[in-house]
Image (cartoon, rainbow, N blue to C red; front, side, top):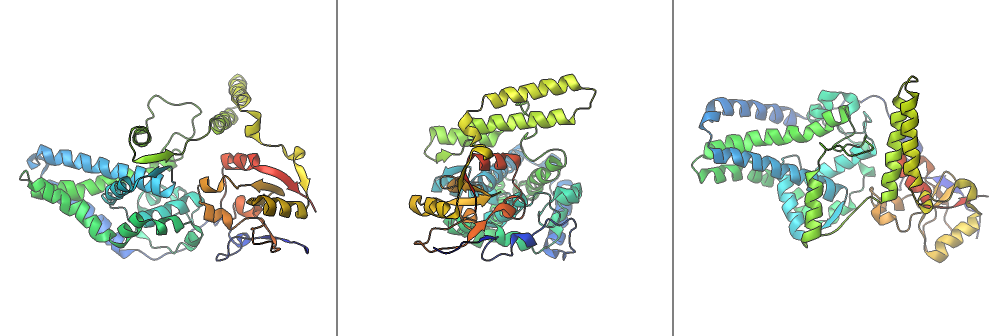
Length: 415
């Protein structure tokens, strides 16, 4: 069969992962003049409009209700549609719902689905990296909130982000192609026309169009800035137990649509063992942050973490490294070819991702790039080592991601 060699690889169209370090400074980039002019100008126009053109006192109640509904509709369109559906595939939606969510997201005036999702996936891939995260919180509160809008960087890592699903989606393609006229129509023309039916066309344009856009923008941008400045995003990731004040309306809307309508056929739910592991991990971190004078509290937190881990089924921990079978390259090749399995080689271990590929947050196509030995009609191919890519060269996986990888290990490769 010939000797097989192990080669680290990023992709056929991208540089090797060894040449992809995390940079600590941001390179100078040109000003995005269209945004630098339009964004502040709309704020000024909104202020002038609210004071002189359509003062608050003259705005009809129906118009103010429309502003609120427009804001909420756009917010749900961005969170449920752009973010959870199109970006992360948290659920499977019917065509009518996909169209509705695209329409609602367009009302947010934050770019097309394709434009938004690609940059958000880049943000997840290189979170807070000042060079590659489009709105890195590490560059300051103001920059992560809206400063990033004024610059036009060339995201050289954008080619590494999965986009095949977006290009195959007819809803995404249509909205991307006609985004500008759709955004103007939905965000400015429609509220003006609707408000005209009750005799407040000017108020509809100023308040339902301009001011509603500003509210929607800063509401979303606050997630990039304040939520990452003092937290980890839109959800209470840093707590081990729910807080009564935490609520997630998009989650319940998705669940209700899945439970009682045909609009959502399936949803992704985190397995209970993974939740228990994550809660235990957060308790450990909380204990580490306590001072040496708080040993009793530390011990209590560690005990709670241990109790949670004890609730995790043994099979959910995977096979410990010292108990993994030792395979030769020939045995690995037989496992792949005879069982039609898809495996990665990480830290010297064989990781079977056959059933997991479709659920991988980065997409199945991404994982295909790093398969240790692609099946190709018994053709002998060099082994690809995904270790560097897994540990930061391509994506710096979280502790939860690393735990999931350990569960899928089936053997250790020996020569």
